[in-house]
Length: 410
Ligand SMILES: *Cc1c(COP(=O)(O)O)cnc(C)c1O
Image (cartoon, rainbow, N blue to C red; front, side, top):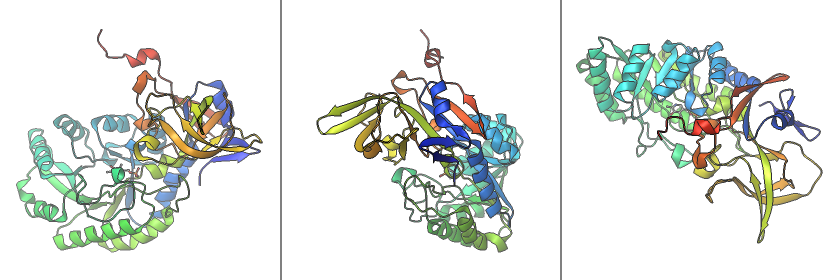
């Protein structure tokens, strides 16, 4: 599953003691396993090997360039949602012809940039955007390849903030509007309609919403009577944070392949969390253990600026000492140093009694961890490390105080 495990009470990543890294470096720090990243990528790639497909890793989950280079070496494509992500994907060596670009608010500058670089296609989210792409491509004397993002309006069980496939969510176009676009395609002279895109949300553990939406969209494509090359089924595959039972890559592929195989469509997948989520941990140091009334607070040196998922989504992350000692289990709130009550990693959590100076590992932090980090409270963003077998390397330096004022005019 992933490459973090305990040996005699000691947390090991691949073949490296996490304590060795933490005690040599300033905490907090993110730590990733190279093997987990490549294993997850290969698992999905193998599961879909019987049909033509392209895996476009979703950069927003984690866009560290070293990790992107790893994925580029494995011939992954990229799913980007901004000019900045496009820049990073290209810099990492991901081929422009394997990059898809989604998002409801692409700007003129971003569209021009992507057209200049020759990306595989835009995933278009509104008619207004399609008009703009058509106009810009015309000015540049180019033909823009696009897929229409359809909102299939299906029930998806996940946190409302990361659900994208209901008609009241801001993403994609209804099937009726998409149909209209295909009918009027001749009026978009500088656009080539190449596919249909859907992405129904994130951290989805059951295959049913996927198969239901793919069925809808395949039905729509058949009714179009128009030669389409690509069907992009998005990302969203769920992972284990606590006791979830997500479908495996194999089960997911077994459910999806029969729905698309006979249609001669090339499939694009846009996994983010599935690839990197369980490939990373956030390591933090206990600063103080504080009793207040009936509660125990474990104050650590990481904050919501480093990992915002618990504060933002009430997300659960497993938290354990990096070195487990024989000690009693207590219930505690594990909180950061930031001046907000929402700055917590866990509440009323059972954990082995720890003391100041101990390191804690916050698990499943590889996706939407560092990529959502900020410098709130003027806290420099932390470092990132990668374990490769029995070695580890720094893949992003901890920011300095000087970095906090970069660009500020005074
Ligand atoms: C966020 C996003 C993804 C990746 O979602 P995961 O749940 O991390 O797999 C894929 N496609 C689009 C369009 C997205 O917005």
